[in-house]
Image (cartoon, rainbow, N blue to C red; front, side, top):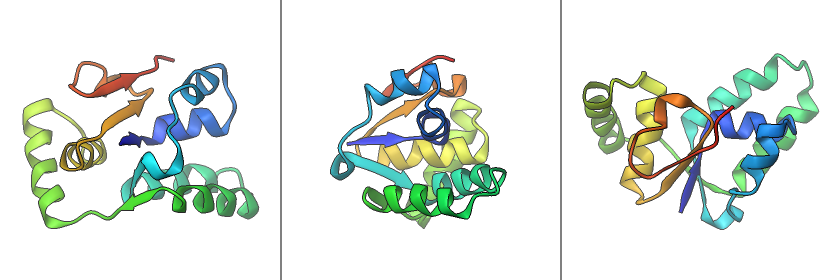
Length: 123
């Protein structure tokens, strides 16, 4: 399983040079995890586009993946990841979600670069 984080989705969706490299690592939807916090962050980003159709297409694509809601177990693990790895809350939720599901993380976010189980595509 592979968790695709917000930075990777945005780069891929904008078809940037980095996004094309991210595309080389995107799993099939049945092997992709999407935490609900990533859905929120991507929706927040896409709201800047002022294009409701684009947002609906993005969310429809994400719904073909395994959407993982934030539950108590992940929340408590995320709190620990905040302390242990000095991660911001959203990043800690992403990390804890991946850990809880035995998944790696596909990211362009340097905050994750040195963590275990990360495929880092630098900008």
